Length: 246
Figure 1 (spheres, rainbow, N blue to C red):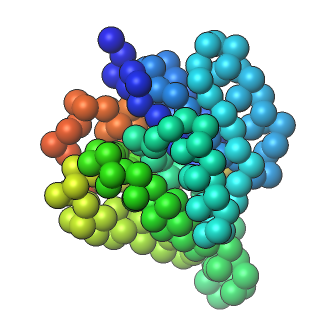
Figure 2: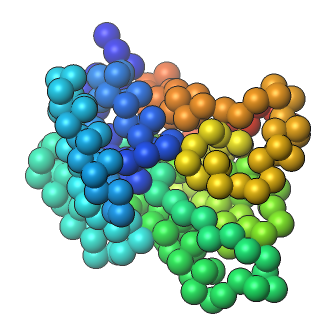
């Protein structure tokens, strides 16, 4: 018996990085996997082919999580294809870094829409099927930057802090329906996004475990939160940061 046997998971932004690792780890634990991608079409299609080749019931969808109508249409399509949604992982995210003095309104709006509004869009869209089933696990990927802030990332930090407030509010609203809402806050994880950081060494020096994390290490925490092993855990923010914030 695997931890996610017979569960259907929907993961946004899964063509690379942490999202891809979550999709693969969920599949390994027996889940049927629906996932989205937007700009990385080839990588999204490759992940779908890879999972299907391993015998996993998996399907990728090209969908913009920051668009409310597209989010609704996506969930309706997933319900048609998979029958239900037991687990939602809101992972889609971008960075457009810059000091506030130079940050444009467009850079602010883009990051807030992709990182935060997408969480509202998808969560809202899965509520009815989850409420009908009286069961569900919503996992939102935030960041240690949303907890402590970071110079040059006012837009990103605000979006990730907003996810924490949203997660806790949803937990309070939906707990009586047996729908759990938790957040995972990765620290410095070795992905394409963090490779672009100018102050990488500065981040690594702040980590007690003295290394960056692996995407799989974030994915394993998500497996736990998605599974029945976490049936009494809701409204929490779990840091996967090597002890960076203690």
